[in-house]
Length: 135
Image 1 (cartoon, rainbow, N blue to C red):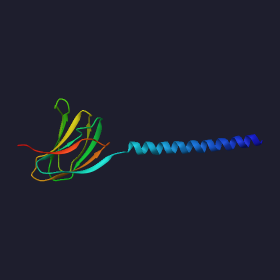
Image 2 (cartoon, rainbow, N blue to C red; image 1 turned 90 degrees about the vertical axis):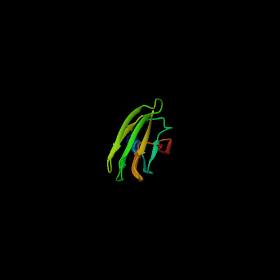
Image 3 (cartoon, rainbow, N blue to C red; image 1 turned 60 degrees about the vertical axis):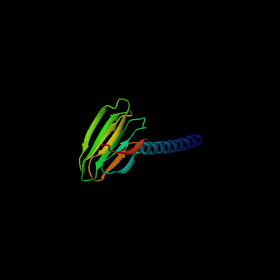
Image 4 (cartoon, helix red, strand yellow; image 1 turned 120 degrees about the horizontal axis):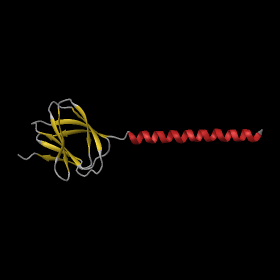
């Protein structure tokens, strides 16, 4: 009878150990899948904010225009300079865009006042800068 009790305790410890491993794996997967980068972006009057010039993987961006003025958002191919996507982000509008690794995003502020956009990226993106419009 004693070997059965010992076997039963070993099984109980093994089940407890497996539950712990499964819990740790689930927590790690949740943390990895929820990793996002959120930022408030201010674009001065007559300037363009350029995002992703040095990026080498696909990502998504959720954009929310928190200002009272529209902003033009363009996706340009890094190699051919071809327009891939373009959208006018209206005041208070929120939208989600998918961005390819071969694409650079331009936030164009043609207004005479600064605009603010909340940007939530699915991952860290390399290569960001401002550019003054040339007339």
